[in-house]
Image 1 (tube, rainbow, N blue to C red):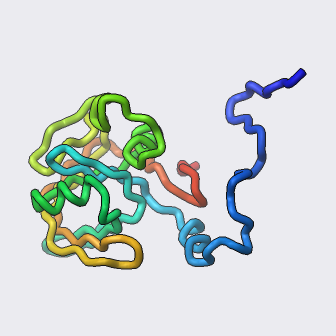
Image 2: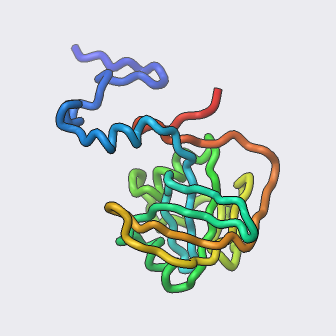
Length: 176
């Protein structure tokens, strides 16, 4: 008789049985995985969206935003066409949303079919977000296997303080 442990967080394997052995993995990718990164949702009019964990906000007048996005994503096509996009820092309650926009979780009816959304000129943002930035696309160029997107922050909306959702070593993490 086969017994499955039903405890929350229980797993059959302690490691990913499909993962390449450590000696075959890219050392650059392994290094990147050891750097905790904020999980953000980038959206654009269309609507289109993508989960992005390589986002950097640069202070100055005006403020700037840098990020690495997939050149073949619907988000990039929409941002390039409209010249604008929104960036929303996600929190722990947004894990499923992050997976949906990363293409890791099913989205029957489309990416924006579930959850509440606030329409903005920069793209839809989750209505329960602790804040978001409206960005004007300045330039993008190939950078590694991604596009390095540079943008000017035109609008910032902040709500209450919220804990960030982080990506570290292939998993979501929270500050403790």
